[in-house]
Structures are given as C-alpha cells and as structure tokens.
Image 1 (cartoon, rainbow, N blue to C red):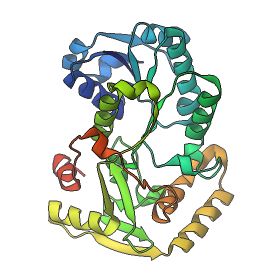
Image 2: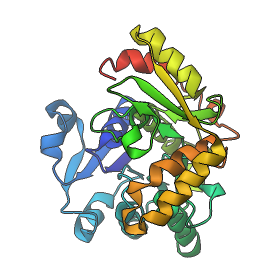
Image 3: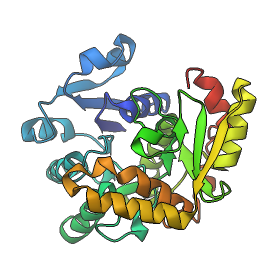
Image 4: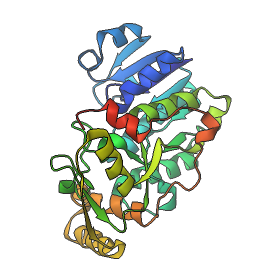
Length: 307
C-alpha cells in the first residue's frame, strides 16, 4: 500500500514511518520541514514528501492524499489540530476516495466522557460525532492510555511531572500518588503506538473503522516505582498526597480558578483523577487480535537510559 503519514516529523509520526516501511509499504510524508526533522536514510526511502505550510494548507492536503491507499494521521494533541486540522484532512481524503483513515487519537477512553469533562479530549469527541454525521469514511481510533514518554516527562515528549499536576518528578526521582497507588495505569510507548497503527491500517477490515483498545502494559504506580528502582538501582521516593475524593476537589477547584482557553494549566489534575477513579479505564483490551509483541516497562526503561 501507499500510505500518507501526516504529522510525519513528530514523535509518533517518525515511528509510524518506520513501522510502515518495515512492513514493506510505500510511505508519503506530509510535513512543514521534513528535510530538517527526518534522517537522510528515512528521506531516501519515502515515496515522496509533500511540503505543507500548516494544517489548513488545502492544496498540500490534496496533493498528499492523491493516489494513496490509506492515511495515518499523527498530528499532536493541540485542539485546533485534533478537530479543525483533522476534519480538513478527512475532507481531502474524501475528495481523493481514500477509505482507510487512522485518526490522531492515542488517548484514554474518551468514549465514556461527555463534552466538558476533559477539555483536551473534547476535540476527539467532537470530531467523532461530526464525522459520523457527515462522512462515509469510518476512521480508526486507537485508545492506548498514557504515553510512557509523557508519563516519565521525557524531554521533548510532554511533561506530566508535578509542575503540571502529574505523577513523576524526573529530577528528584519522586512519585506522587493520589489514592492508594494500587489503581491500574494503562500506558503505551510511542513506538508501540505506531506499530498498532501500521498493523491495523493494513488489515482487510480497516475500512470498517472503529475503536481499538490497546496498550503496552498495565501497572500500578507502586509497580512503576519498583520497576524504576530495579532498572536504575536508585530509591524512588513515594508520597501519598491524598484520597481520590481530595484529588477530585483539587481538580474541580483548579478548573474554577482557571479558564478553558488555558485548560493546560489544570488539566493534569483530571488526567490523574479519571485514571485513579476508573472513569476512562480500558476495560477490554484488543491486543490479542493483533498478536504484536509490546514493550514491557523494564524494556522501556532500559531502552531509555536518560529517563
């Protein structure tokens, strides 16, 4: 197949390109500055690169979609990309007659939420609802929990450290726990996320779209602390911050004091809350349908010695 990868130079996009090439597919990349972000070796293996000035560059979207068999969208999680940008890409796919479309998603299970519960997931909900009303394309949505790179605040991959109301303090090797620490956290590496997308898009039933609930692993925060200690040989400081109900009140208060335009200032509280209270837990996983090897927590830590 010839597959268009949008957001091709991002953390997920680069992995998606490699996963597709490994499977023998042709890959076309759409990006603003691929030549400075992708290695010469990868660039030499691409079918082509379509230069784009931004998510609303309709002409480049049409050039990118022309003649491809499938699209994997690897846009980042900014609301304007997730909703507006992704809709523009989908309309270009419609004009080109493309039926296989992997939506930018890779998240916790927002199908259990109502608009306004989690501002960062509102664009996913809105995109899904609008496409269902207006398009014959049936996108594929991959629900995969938190990225391991984001959880551990790896530089350049997002920061879920306590300064953004997350769990892991990378400087102090400290883990903040709300609840008991025995609640399950579903997590996925960026490489595994790309593998899921590349494997799903080539299936015969990819045109049927739908939801896939997949992850690299499921661990409690206590287990994560123990795994880090075993991999690094250092003691992880663990502090219980309060109960789940206390976390809920902290999150709601932060929302009242903030603004929706600046939801990133408080949304970390809700990522923690909806994980530990089970609101968006991945109840039934589809990993066995794909049969892919996924990265263990120990493997991830060994592969990323700077974390």
